[in-house]
Length: 108
Image (cartoon, rainbow, N blue to C red):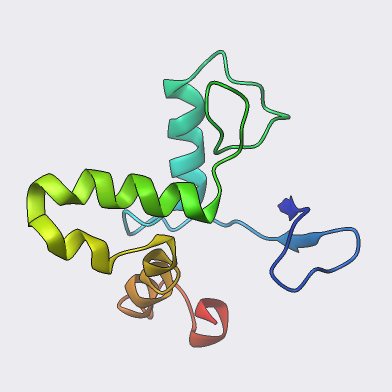
């Protein structure tokens, strides 16, 4: 379980998010976080997961800039059509393709 301190709905005290494994797919958030931990063994486990070496956190604006910079050499000016918000529907859409892994309630 993760606790998000800064939530979209601004819940006092944060909001709990349950993470659970998806054994049959490459969509497992637990495996992704374990892989991140293994690839960065010196990372502070009490610090935010997505932060820069300067200590600044990855914000939606910074993510949008990075996504566009990475996509621009591949797709040209169409990169400007993507933002950090583009990822919001990606995981639920991918999970919906595997009804045996996650129910529609879990996807929601």
